[in-house]
Length: 344
Ligand code: CA
Ligand code: CA
Ligand code: CA
Ligand code: CA
Ligand code: CA
Ligand code: CA
Image (cartoon, rainbow, N blue to C red; front, side, top):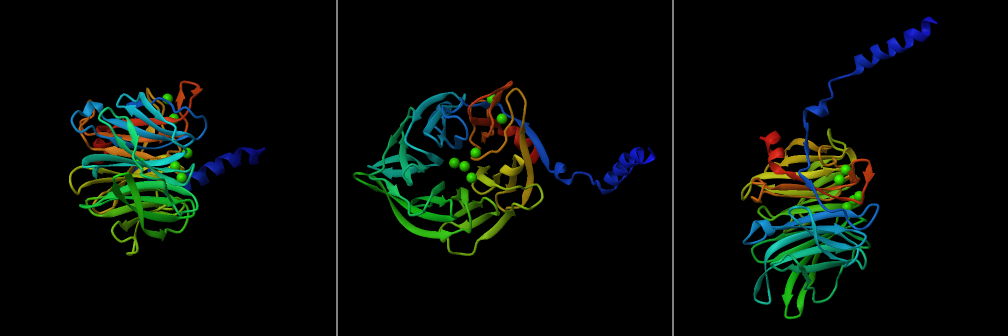
């Protein structure tokens, strides 16, 4: 009899002795989504990555270009409503760059890693936000299984980096021809193991590469063979594999934040853009709109948009609910002021 009472008390005392204030919590804050996009058409794991197109003359007409990795590209307006759907294949990651000279015109280019045929899809954006295929021929990757993708631009040239499920990364140079845009393979490196999320910082000629089960690495975008730097390990405090999407909030030419989806603990880690020092993590919790979990792709912009003077952060949501209903996956949009408030 005595023992049955003693045991729970003893357990409680032992637990209290071991218990330390939850260190992680001090560096984790939460925000809520301001809005969410129309769910993708495909069920199960389908929404994956996004990029943001800033309209050159009217920021209200800017769009969010998302991937439905079962089907194709989806274009949303800034209210999150689906505008256009392009069933071009199982596109996984997507990225964007302006100022590509094509047929004598300053062109905005959107590229995507297409798993249907192991290629890089290339589109331009028309002023109304529609996409147009401008590849001269399919850019066929040599990686066994194409997976992640990001773009990089220096003063002269625009590049596409693609990563593979076996840890390879290819660097492709985009070249305009009278027949469309073609790709020239410049380099292939091995990261180590499965690699998806990547982002290039054009200002510093660096590329951040997430090796899903290990670490976030920083490479020299001009010379991938130069020694890499470790930014964070999946085993570090506040982090949990997989490491997924990575994006850059550009406050000005050089300062800002690197943000990484730490998928295993449903959080987003923020680093200083210049020093790469870890600052804090945040979660998107349930509010008027459901919170996020299991996030793959993320993207962010610091551009002043209608209702969002400091820009927006976008995250793919692994389980999109509306009340008790489980809907198809979608993307959540956060007012970046809510994030900045906690960082500064
Ligand atoms: Ca997923
Ligand atoms: Ca992206
Ligand atoms: Ca992944
Ligand atoms: Ca993914
Ligand atoms: Ca959710
Ligand atoms: Ca929802």
